[in-house]
Length: 138
Image 1 (cartoon, rainbow, N blue to C red):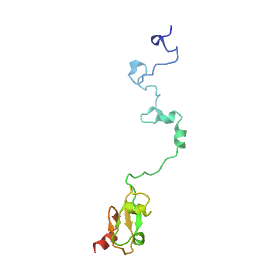
Image 2 (cartoon, rainbow, N blue to C red; image 1 turned 60 degrees about the vertical axis):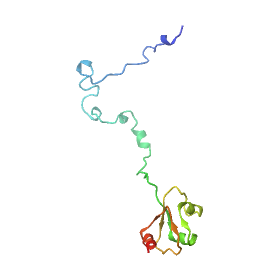
Image 3 (cartoon, helix red, strand yellow; image 1 turned 180 degrees about the vertical axis):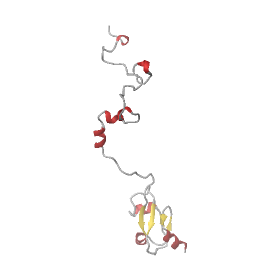
Image 4 (cartoon, rainbow, N blue to C red; image 1 turned 90 degrees about the vertical axis):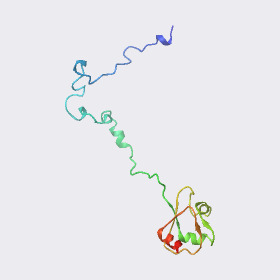
């Protein structure tokens, strides 16, 4: 009768692992089945080259550079602020999103531009360039 304890592997289906580099008396000491000299006998050589995987490795497209963890600023010009806002309004990412000047309110926003700011608005939660900061301080 077939039971779990009576199941055995068929003869020759599994071989014992070759235990290598355990001294000369083990039968596989000294060179540890690597032969004498050469690149393959040294340590630190990738086994993938020997297993025929180099071709596959070379075929995989490599992605260059890196992707920064810090998101890039969404840029809004001073000209767009002058055209879309009135005196006394506040400029924040939510309002800029409703006016479709930016694509997402999750990413940081920066106001850029060399032209003067003609409307008196309040900036909340946005970055400003240096020239605009000086103009607002005056």
